Amino acid sequence: MNWDDTAPSAATDPALAADRLVGAAADGEDTAVEAALRPKDLGEFVGQERVREQLDLVLRAARARGATADHVLLSGAPGLGKTTLSMIIAAEMGAPIRITSGPAIQHAGDLAAILSSLQEGEVLFLDEIHRMSRPAEEMLYMAMEDFRVDVVVGKGPGATAIPLELPPFTLVGATTRAGLLPPPLRDRFGFTGHMEFYAPPELERVIHRSAGLLDVEIDAEGAAEIAGRSRGTPRIANRLLRRVRDYAQVKADGVITRTTAARALDVYEVDARGLDRLDRAVLTALLKLFGGGPVGLSTLAVAVGEERETVEEVAEPFLVREGLLARTPRGRIATPAAWAHLGLVPPQQQPGATGQQGLFGA
Image (cartoon, rainbow, N blue to C red):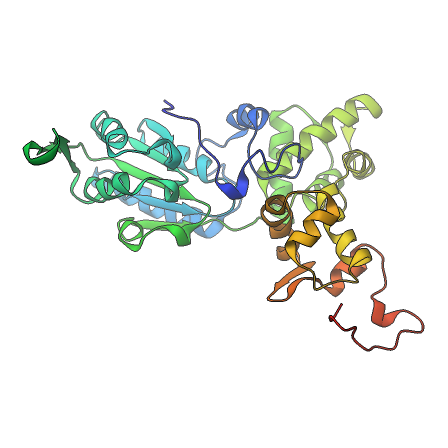
């Protein structure tokens, strides 16, 4: 049962990442397809070996005791499987799940209404938990620890607090920014798991599984080609698989091979390293217009014709993670890997270069 659609954080705002095939935020199509592709238990879940093993122990122990599972906090980038794991927790415990998000809970009364209607053992999935309002957050402390909340009735001197007992439940919190969670809230979770980006072999397993569910024929090299361009994120891998499937059905014989996958993703402007048009525009401007930097964020954003927030929150995180761009106190600079990826020669290595820095270090 969904109380509210999951609201994205500022870093994954669809308005910022609109029309990005390699964006990690889920759109309407992703939500519908992911429901069909999601694994149903921990045995089917691919990747996140350490988190999976630890979570399996927590759930088995809870079932053996006949108790509700400890509260679980899942952190990590969008698209790595936090929502899927929350649904698996509910399935493994044989309990219903209720889904809401931090931005949807702006008042303590909103949270009290949800908590008071929970059944015993039910799983409450709270996405983007770090974006909850402070009054609701303080109410959640007591609910998680003592399974009760105090509902305030009336205003002013005549206000009274009525204690409301709650049935035991399991809270699964998900966040893309664990550092924003206050320590008192973080300490109330019995288990904390950090979701890592996937290695290419793990993404290949995800792609083969999804291809089987989508009734798409794909060979090992085709899966490897898609995995290599998926930024370590299963959601992106599944999205690219669907686009390559469309290309294979229209332009090829319906079978996804390495050649077919490469040609399809070239059409969609996703290169061999997973960079799209925006990523390459940022790198190209940084290298060709500013000699590799350092250059200020606002200047770089103007050069590529995008908003400052779009460059900072949409393009830069992946470029930094890939070691193509670095943030310094003086501005953004390109790394040697960026020059190599775009096939350009750094100014210091060009014939006739003196090797001396310019006045502004560019």
